[in-house]
Length: 274
Image 1 (tube, rainbow, N blue to C red):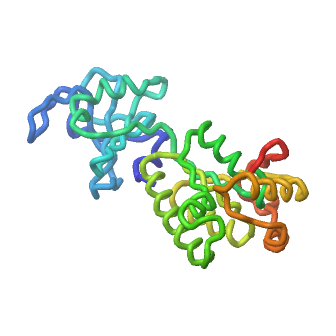
Image 2: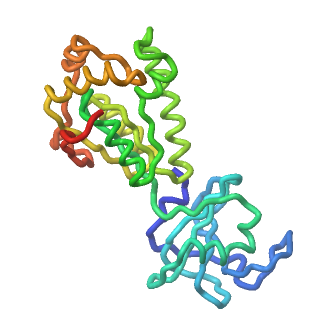
């Protein structure tokens, strides 16, 4: 996760080295907002994290306020906090307007919330991908459905499945980490059948962001099996899983329980189709 994002929503103290009305020492433009840094912090460029103090029309030396947003420069490694008075609110347009004197030279996005990783948990046929696609639109988020990628690349019945599975998993982890670093929510539509796998992925995800949640789909197994067999016939873009494979894989399935103590929401998937 970007170092600056952990300050979102927090009260921080800024030391101004370029107060309102001062000039840039190299380029000469005028600072139309107070601009400073958070002492004792480290940004992506190795220096202290910079901050704009907005909605205040007088020069400041120091200021304590709330961090309401982060300007993430997509072509630079130097993000900026947006600090405003505790009682104030500010729109993205107002942020853009008040920081344009400097940020107009950089490609950037405004991030308001710490990005989250959503782990979709459930057995084959429980409706995971249908649910993940819906969540993708609602959040919004970037969705990674492992089986979808596997099928598109290697076909419905890939040989050397374990090796190919690991290869795609490595790519997804890399791409998911990149999306989190850009401030985007991520959905991992995997299944997470075993306690061991849930533990490993939760630890990995927590290294990227503190916002991690399992979405646990529940469905009776007869309904799930019917869905899978129907999908085999109707959808040629899905991995092929016959009844025998379904029963064998079911032996590996360990439903997530509330006793595992993960942040989780539980969903009945009977109206869905995987």
